[in-house]
Image (cartoon, rainbow, N blue to C red; front, side):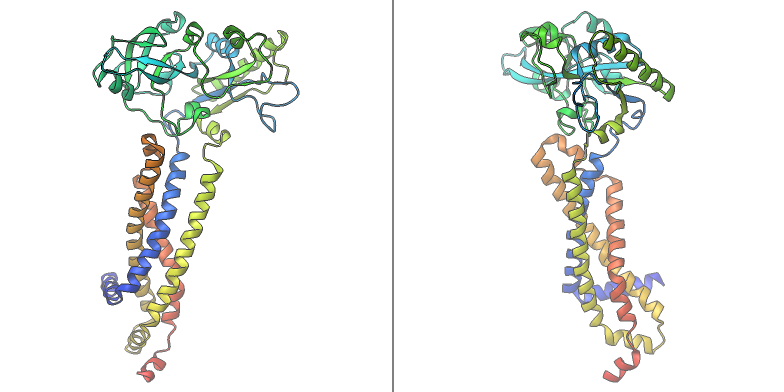
Length: 437
């Protein structure tokens, strides 16, 4: 029976091509607009490291001003001081721990044909790479001894390796960075976590860094600060060392804790550390230390912005407007079939059979509109990608989940839009139509 209804639906669509195209276009516009924003919101809020996101925790200790919190209502600072980052890392109380910051410096490629350029650099420790499952194309990360010895080693992103060494295996080769000679120990495979959860403060949807070097080289080479730097207390002197000893925050820390027991043990360690610092005249605020896993931290930092949510609701409202237009077009279309419907009722077709037939017709229109809407959504996502660069491709791609959602949304929307016109069409009294004929 369904095949029969489907044939009737296709005949009806071909019989009224203008109305059918208008309905498909209305649904396509609504689906295209809504799926563009739904996809962006879906990917912005996706779990960037699902295999271990519940084992990775961002560390916060409240070292802030006694007179006011770092953030309302009572949030601790979102970064650490140099002193706290190094103290907590040196304690080695977690299965893995990473401290990091961002900086920038001039890279001088070994080839005279390549021009020097200013590189975006992540200062970090060796466990950054295994902790965050960072893939390597060549070589690997440096060892813990390189962190302690402040060795001048570097890991390159694939993009930087292509730029500096033409994509060759550059492990063991040298480049000049910040006026010093660095040895390449590894080259990353293409790696674009979206969102860039490990440092949302510098832009959750920015490209990862160009180079990675040992954290303590910041002090050794007196590298400039990157990202957000905040101070509640003026440094005691204006020297570089004075800034490092100050209460200014510019550093991040993540720890890997396999289970809840490890988390509670590490939180107790943080509280003990805070009490020790209080005895030294620091940490004037009450204990307020935090451990947030990946998804909690992204929610805390509002990675999905209010603007994105507003755009989502606006696009869904636009879809509703498009469906209301579709309702009007369906009423016009089915009103024109009054004589046919009356005749079919007179020769024995039940109201239920006619209802199912016209629902199949609206479903066909809806699916066609959904497919066209997917094409429009794809174009919209390409436009967003062109505005925000190559990294935005991670946030502007339609995966199978979004394709299925678009088709399901278009199907449900079109059927919902067709309920009233179909009910009206099936309520036609056959006697009145036959008499008028």
